[in-house]
Image 1 (tube, one colour):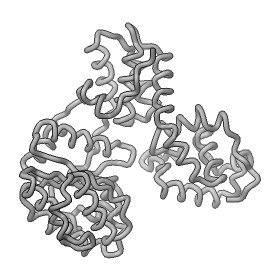
Image 2: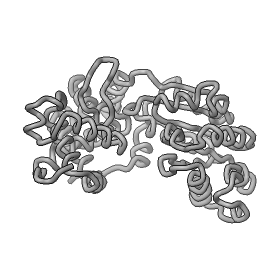
Image 3: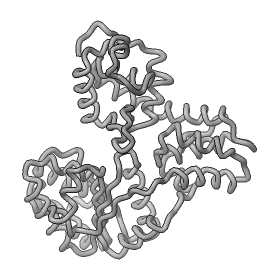
Image 4: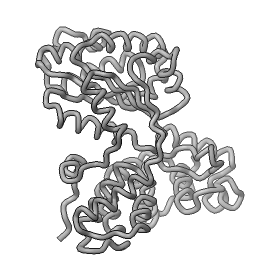
Length: 358
């Protein structure tokens, strides 16, 4: 009988995530009310890394409650204030404390300390996708105000994190408006070796065996994505009796694909025919998508049209730019399991109509 799919929280209870000195350092800093600014490359997995920080912070210190605010959901400073007000009041279940504070006023930024004082707790506010603050027209002036509000609040912890883009660097490095809010860390260490070692240790701790090449393969098929790799490792483990096989890896990957299928289907439903054709070419070919043969085979139009399609998919955060350091022009999927779903299920059962224009 197939084991039920484990949620992120359930898996965390059963399997202690690998720890390194920097992770432990962050926990200490946050517990002592040292605010943090964290950046990483888009495919590095900072979202799940910080969620794990928040999870362990709450587990170790029961007087701390974490609230996550996604900057991606706001387009202006005014909409961010409303989002901030709404998210804190609902996630921290403290509606009375916010009754006299207008959701569209700067006073909303004082809510963490107001709620902390009322509930006699410490409040941690983690702002994800903080690299998108640059979209606000009044970004500099608003963020300077936000920094002043955050710095002066007691019993509060603030962690802003996002992709290491040029826009975000301008905000967090001096003299940027967020510089000085907290200590800045750029997460750049290569986690590949640590994660494959972590997989082998997981199997060893459960008296099971896995070959080095198999652990590397598991890391490879999910692009070494921290969250997906840990999910995949656990589901391979529960399918393994003694020795891990590639067949078990394939079945566990299928578990992940089926679990997220509804979400992936909604994503493709929002795409145009040409965007889907581009993704099909990316999955099947991977590079040289502007060559005449590929343009013709996948009916992508001109090379200029390919550039526009790529830009639209980057804005939707479906693909990322290639590694400019290595000169790679291969399309990088932000979500590697979405790519595998396209390859294994979607494009094998659905043909992409080519009689519509982009």
